[in-house]
Image (cartoon, rainbow, N blue to C red; front, side):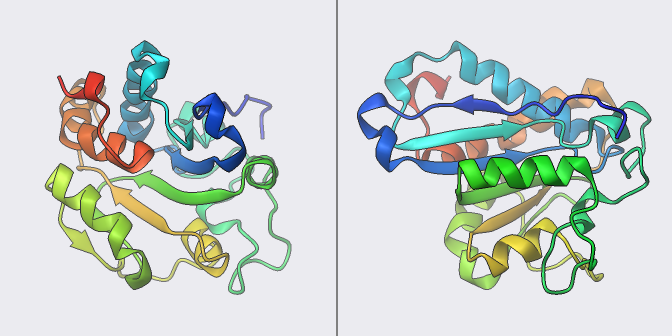
Length: 212
C-alpha cells in the first residue's frame, strides 16, 4: 500500500461484561470505488460517539468505514498494489500466497485479537442483503429493518473472499449491498434506509437513544 492508515472504531462493551464480549465487525469500502459504503459507516460511527455508555451491552462493535484507503483515495476498486482486497483471504479457494496485501494482514491480526462473533461487509451497488443459508437469522433482521430484499449470491465466483473465509471459520457473515448511488449527496438517505438495521446488527437491539 501507500502507507495510508487503516482505522478501526471500537465501541467497548459494558465493563462488567468485558470478559464475555461478542465482537461484531462492520466493514465498508473494501472496494474503493463503492463510495457511499465509507460515508454511511462514518455517519454511523459519528452517531455512536454521541450515545451515552448506558446503551452498551456484551457486544464489542468494531467498525472499519474505509477498509481500502488507497483504493478509495484513487477512486479504484483495487488497492495500491492492484489487489482486490475481497479476494485476498486464505480460504480453501483463495490465492496460494494470500494474504498478499498489508490491509488483509492487518485485518487478520485484528481478528486474532478480537475473534469475530459476526460480521457485516458493506458493499455497493445491488441493494440486497446476501447471506449463506446457515446465517439467515442474522440476515433477516437486517432485511426487515432496511426493506432491502434477501439474496443468496452475487451471480459470479468470489474465490478468496472474506465471505468464504469467514464461512470456513464458521463465523456468520452478511454482505450488504447498498443502493447504486455513489454521489456523497445521496449518502444521508442511504444511511437512513439502513440505520436501524445497523444498530440492531451491532447491538442485537435498537438502543433507546437511537430511536429518534
